[in-house]
Image (cartoon, rainbow, N blue to C red; front, side, top):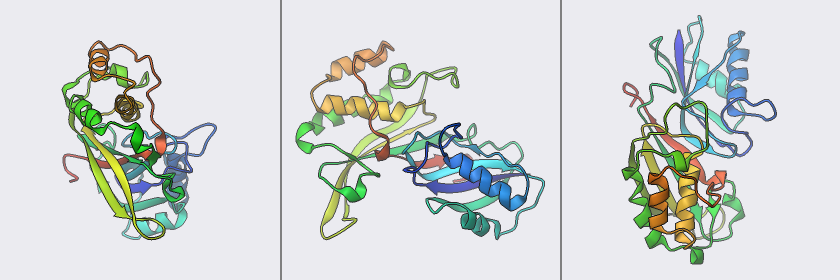
Length: 255
C-alpha cells in the first residue's frame, strides 16, 4: 500500500530535504522515524528538493508498506520526529500516486526584511530598504511569467531533461505582522511564485536577479535579454536560503 505524508519543517538545522552523505536532512529523519515505528526499512520520496536552510510549510512525501496504518500513526510519528518537523496527516493513496511527479503546481514564497531583527534571521533575508528600488523590482517581476526557458535562472542538474517551466504567478506584497518579540510589528516584502515545476536553485536565482535590479546593478533590459538568450549572468545571483519557503503543493485529487 502507498501512503502520502503531509508535513512541514523548519529547514534551519538541515542540509535540505534530500538525504546527504555529509549532513543531516529532513528525508533522513523521516525515513528513520517511519522505519522505527513500522519496524521495517522505509524510504520516502519527497515532492521536491529544498536546499539547506530552506523551509516548507506544505510538503508531501510518499512511501510503501504492506502494513495497514491506523489513525494513531500520525501521532506516533510526531512523537518520534524532531520538533522542527511536523506531520499533519498520513493517508493512503492509489499505488501509482507519486509525490513528486504527480504534483501539478508548487508555490514558493521568499521573505525580505529591512531592519535588524535577530529573532527572524533564520526565516527572512535582511536587505536595507535604502538599497532597493522596489518599483523596478515589481516591473521586472512582471516579465517572469512570460519566460518559458529558465536555463539562465537555475543550477545545472542531470535530473531534468528540459528547463521549460510554466510560471503562472509572480508577484510582491508587503506583509506587516505583530513582532515576534517585543512591541510593534515586523515588516516584510514577500515574493510569491507558482509554477508547474521548479528547477534547482531557480527561485533563489530569480530573487537574486530581482535584488540586483532593485540595486541598479542589473537593468531590466539586460535581465530580459540574458534569460531569453539562455545565457549565464555575469553576476552571482543566488539569494540566501533562509528567506525561502515551499508553501503550497497541489495535486489533482488532494486539494
